[in-house]
Length: 390
Image (cartoon, rainbow, N blue to C red):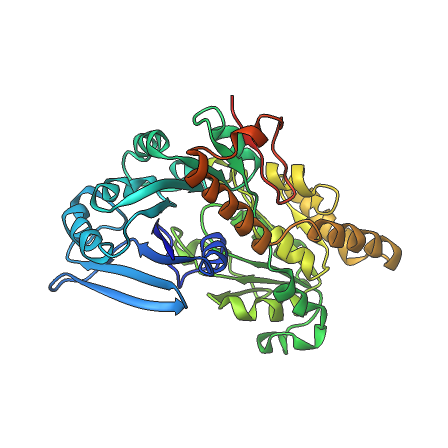
């Protein structure tokens, strides 16, 4: 099997999202080494290895450098790990989720270089040093770039000649388990209704003030937040009797939470960190056939504005939630029809297969499908890919 060596700032056992979905599908065709950012260990440097799936090995360097990420002080240790662990992965595809890992490319035998740009990491809180410079260097080395949504695609399409738009997709079968509302998570047995829920990382992208205002305006609403806090002090998050923090929960039980909710929330701040996001949960919420309310994240508006209720202020957000809770059967059935139509056009399996086709074309042509792509004019946002060569 051909190999893929992945360099990721996200851990395999953290929130299950784009990297795990795609690489799980690709592991049917490739031997994959998932090289995570290092963990701090004050003793002798070491490496942790485990295999979550057939053909997938997760590699976690443990170093005495108490700094997160692929920073310069970590590189002597990380280079050695790359040389040792990647030695058997000859003529591999190097696949980057973070540009800061680019120095490790010199330590491996890479046939092609992929940049799967799922976030604008330089816009996040406390980004690694020199992120923008590393990204420019990675774009210069990459053979192909995958963009995780229309906003990211538009930001990158002029910076590389071979960029493809692959918005977030969905494992609809997994999340359709929530259609059986009897599987509601046990933590909700004592929670009154209505229940309005969000799952995902709770960080600088979440509008904590909005959550607090919702809880104050409607003390009868039970607001459920599922996910780990990151880069925010939990003590600064709103504390109310009707706000319930459930912490990290495994991907396997997320349908049980959806089965217990009446409205799904995407209460994102409108800031630099959310300017380019394309939330995976949009389609996951749709698979559960629940009403959805979101702040005006551009990709959500552009891709799903006909299905998701978009609110431009805290009062509008609360009003939209009120409408969704009071929505009559015919109105909800119309939304459900739109949700089902949207889900029919995308899946992580389809996305991974399209990516694999482009990787195979790299082997055949050196660039992805020049003849086919010349006939196309723009990106498709329904799970299909198009290259813009401008």
